[in-house]
Length: 156
Figure 1 (cartoon, rainbow, N blue to C red):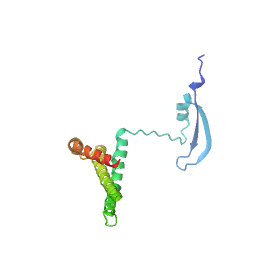
Figure 2 (tube, rainbow, N blue to C red):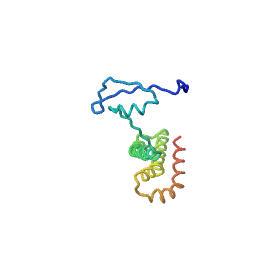
Figure 3 (cartoon, rainbow, N blue to C red):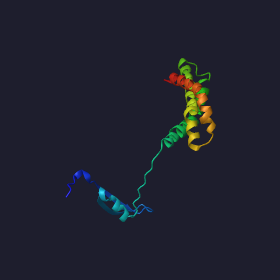
Figure 4 (spheres, one colour):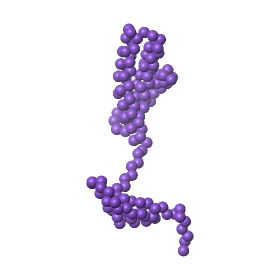
């Protein structure tokens, strides 16, 4: 008989619930990992196992496409309001001038990151406007990247 080490088996506990109401019936069963496939095929009583895999294009779309667009949607108007407030006659100091420069450089960073990262991620994921990804983005990138880096340098 083959010797089986203790590391070859793992005990897993499954609890069955009614998937429509979410009620736990209190029944649980312990099975060895080698018997899990048999247990699942014989005890199909509300055991819901789902496995989602996210590709890199999904993650890029969420963070670069949606995230940066969301920040731009609120960042540009907020920076415009900051410029309006900081340019008022009551706000005349050296600190105001520094904050005004920070606000303007932040607008450069936000707007260039929208063009560099967000638009390509959205257009590739949704499969619209392929001309931007193929022609426009590569041709404007050498001009936008230095502007973004200068704005980022001024912020930090």
